[in-house]
Image 1: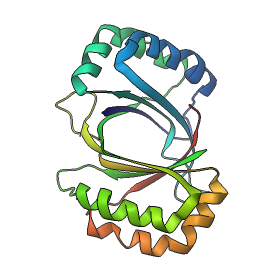
Image 2: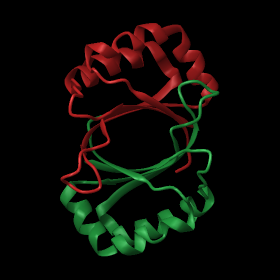
Image 3: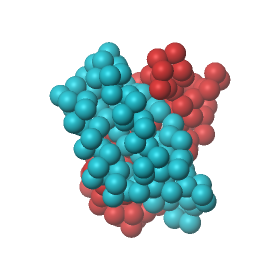
Image 4: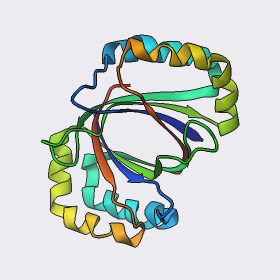
Length: 103
Length: 103
């Protein structure tokens, strides 16, 4: 299984509408990706290694697929719709990490 | 639920022994953290947004707890044992992200 992680960097200027992300953006993404997307996960940043340290990421979203090819096939036709929704919930530019799930 | 993510930055010099991490380090960590640790996950970096782009992180490990307080209580007595094992599987310095699980 592969995991597509969308990591939204934290900063003093970073804004992130978690309610919109969880209740509007992610359902839209799941709807467009269809059955190829096996699971989604969302987290919001609390802190770094120490409670007083800022979290490196203000939020993270994760999408799971059986393979990289299945992700690419599912995502490509909807890339523009999905990416153009980003300014509706954040002023940050996400980093993308695609990973092989090991455990 | 909270998620402690240990993110190992990728670079041309980065080395990571995934076999040791999955089969020695993580079982040791789970053993020391005990029942406070509800779940673990491990991923290895495949690529960035495009298949030819390097993954931002060479590997990521995640530990789930019911609360930040339970993580802190479970981790503190074993911090030195756990952290001193890092050079046995990587030459990178991990970033720590503690998150609130939303979805």
